[in-house]
Length: 160
View 1: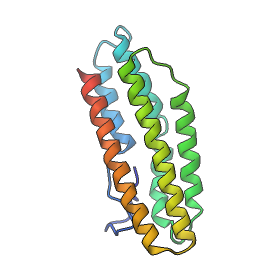
View 2 (view 1 turned 60 degrees about the vertical axis):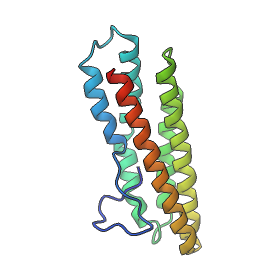
View 3 (view 1 turned 90 degrees about the vertical axis):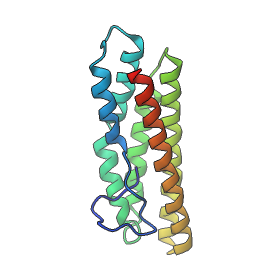
């Protein structure tokens, strides 16, 4: 979620690339190949995936800009706006399948944590606190790992 794609070499303050929101596209294609509309599980998987995918471009663009956070701390505001829009759309969904509902909650928790880390990075950048910025980048790595875990869980459940 937090990788500035335009930066060829990763510094300590720039988290590694992850599967990110784009990895949800793979799940959608697999789920679409299932019995679309006939199976509640598949239909609900598709609704969640579509809600996440609907924000992929905006989130990716905001994430890419985070590489500029030290010189332009205002980019954190763009990321926060993108997160809030994704949260609102995903929170509005209702699922009867408890597993899909659980994945939606996990993704909402992930977005909240990403926003918290984003705010930490912005505060550190504004005060030029290199140590805090490095700490926030480490926390961003954990968010990336959590996202990968959620995507893996969705893949396994929705394809099964």
